[in-house]
Each structure stands twice: as structure tokens, then as C-alpha cells.
Length: 367
Image (cartoon, rainbow, N blue to C red; front, side, top):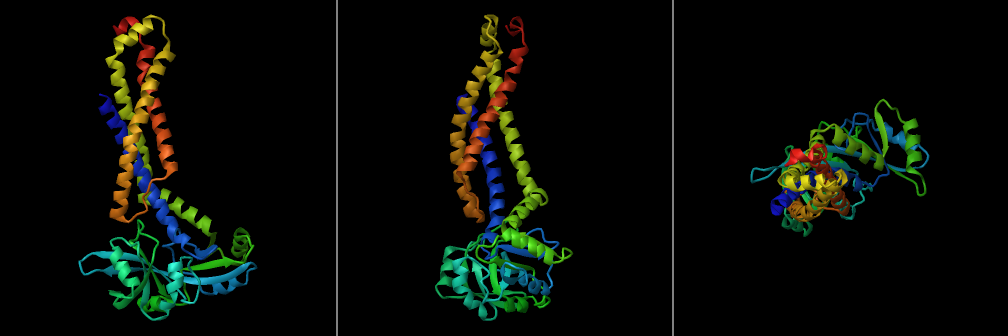
């Protein structure tokens, strides 16, 4: 019976851990591309909710932004989607970022070291963390063997790699020069970038510069955000507006409810099985606090012993999901502690509910 009860608690823990893992993976996958950018402030189209949506900006916004005090550099960035149809029939969806090859638009050393390659037309750098790409594939490219594939009727030559990682809306990323991007997307214009990456001078407060940019640029077509604010807004949008975030949020709530129901059933059955003993104690004068203490003690034992296998199995499942999907799903100490404390609270609540029958019952009725 103890094994069955612990299995129920462990199952509830695994359910909660997996939902939190997926939710955390979503939040991390949103943050990773921002962290790769060499920018303190982002100037975005007014309809952009994330780094990968929204329209374009007039290029003259760049000149006006350069005139704002505290701005060190402004880099126009073009964004698109490259569909890579592979020989095996599978399709890889790549988020493309295109910049002037001489502009320091990224912080990643792998991009900075190979950015000179982008000066050649139809040359790109690919994310080695792209879903379904093998380490051997990336090693061949970095070893000097380019890989070529067709996209939009053009042949792209991949001559280097970097690493950001797969996300929920794309399999990976690709970095191109602005000329290659315009060659690949002939309907796009050089005078209409998607974003402006703004860096500020040393010792300058990005928040203050962002405020000055908001006053200088028309709010009718531009948004100005620090990178930290853009990350927070993107994550909030994904959590509350996009289906995947809402689903994972509900999944966590459902996991907690399932856990409460499972533990309640276990404790309620145990109370029912020992009703005669509890009736004897109540007839002897023991109060509700005594019975609550017994059930709470049992709930604590179930919470602690059930958490251990649930935690270990969740770590193994995280590793399997991460390998299978290339998503940043991993266990961290904060999540483990939160779930452990939540498990204790869940079991305590279930125990309190399970003892209500004893509190209201008459000893004569219990025999």
C-alpha cells in the first residue's frame, strides 16, 4: 500500500515537473536569441510582439536614432524565414537574421570570428543547435567543408556554425549578410529593415537612452525597448497570448490538481480503513488537532518519499526530451525546491481535507 501511495505522489511530481520543464524551456528558448545580440536597446516596428514578428521600419529612423545623445551605434537588421527542404524529405525552418558583415551585431564569438565569410554572396552561418542537425554535420562545416542547399530558388552555402538552439516556433537560426538576404528575398528593400540594434556609450544608462529614443522617434511606427524589457514582454506575450504558453500554464495547474486528488484519495482511504481506531481515540477525548497531526505526519512521509523517485525520473525524462527535441529543457535547483515545497503543501492540503469527516463525526457513529 505504501508503494502504491508513493507511486501516486511520484506520478503527480513527474506531471508537474514535466509541465514546468516545458514551460521553462519555452521561456529559455525565447531568451536565448536576445542574449546573442550585441545590443542594449531594440528599435522595433510598432506591431512587433516578439523578435520574430512585426513589419518593417523606415531606414530614416536609423539616422534619427544616431542623433540621440548616448547612442554609440545603430545597426539595421533584416529578419525572415528560410525553409530548408532536405534530401530525406524533412523540412527545417530557420529564422534568418541578416546584417552588414562589417557590423558587430552579435555577441557570440563563433559569429564574430566567422562574420567575414558573409561578405561573399549566398554564404551563411547556421545554428549548430538546430533541430535534427548532428554534431558530425557541424564538425564537417567548421572543418572547412561547406554544405549547400536550395532555398527560395537560390543556393546557399553554409560555411560556419554558431549555437543558439531550437525554439518552439523555429528549428534553429541562420545568419546572412544583408546583400545575401536581399538576393534571397527579392521583394524586400534595403530601406526597410525589421529591427535596429542600438548600443550605448560606456557608462551610459540604457534606460535613459531608451527614453530619449522614444521621444525622438514617432510612436506611430516604432517601439523602443531595452533588451531586458523586450525579453520580459516577449515572455509575457507568449505566456498569455500564444496557445503554447497558455497550454503549458494550464498544464501546471492541472498537474497540481491531479496531485491533490491522488494524495487525497490515498489519505482518505487510509482514514476510512482506520476509522475504528480513530473513533476510539475520539471517544477517549482526543481533539481534532491530534487527528490532523497524525494525517499530516503521514502526508509529510508521502511527500518526502514520493518526491525522490519523481525527481529522479523527471531528470531522466528532461534529458530524453532535450535530446529528442533540442529544446532547452533542464532541471534547476529553484524548480526542484519549489516542487518539493509544493508537494508538501499539496499533501498537507489533502490531509486536511481527508480529516474533515473525523472532525464532524460522532464517536458512536464511527463504530
